[in-house]
Image (tube, rainbow, N blue to C red; front, side):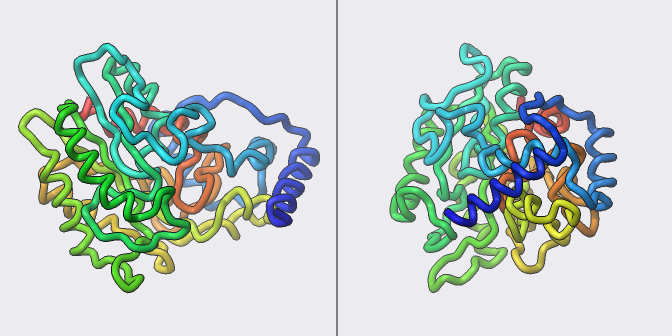
Length: 309
């Protein structure tokens, strides 16, 4: 509690210093806008007035901000969280853990524009890869025994739903198996292939979101404490301290003839991942895109997933 109060006090102080009010609407950037912002991001040294206005809400800039019905612990049935054009005969299924649902602030509008029904099926901490996960801090709501039954139940539900397309997202960093050891690249690839092989059909397209690069800190907390040293809150790219399974994801996509959607280019240059890009804090914690930045990425995200729509 003391830490949270300290963070909010620092953030509030920043807002008073800069005299900025929060709540500005997010306008999607063009591909050129985002590429330029990423290129310039690692030269940012001070928290701007626009960023200062976001700090007090940075930890709450999540899916729940706009879609409370899709917030933790998840959407566990194919009727609980439906967006886009609900009457459409075409269904895009967003499937996975919170690293899938975090894209909803952008995908809901994309689905509406594309005139497709968007069904979100996710649960906190439950992976798409068919793996015996035993430990992933801070752990899912419901525990891993729940996740081991959740996955086959959802595979059955998806088979009955018969979606036009499936878009998969899941956390791949700091996920442990037996003996609290990290999964190997091959284990992760094989686990993801096992699940996708149950979902694939001649009538269903499948795509995989590249898991985000892992930050070593929560950007909002760090930035509120480093108002003039922004890059103290950045992370090297790649991050050897907390590697993910992005290579295994891509290999699984190739093995199952699925599409693979890179994401790192929206968060990092070739060497560094800045916590701020343009006028946005990119993440609300170490691994989840902020709802605000997801909306800023809506145009490039729409272009990326267009083959599934």
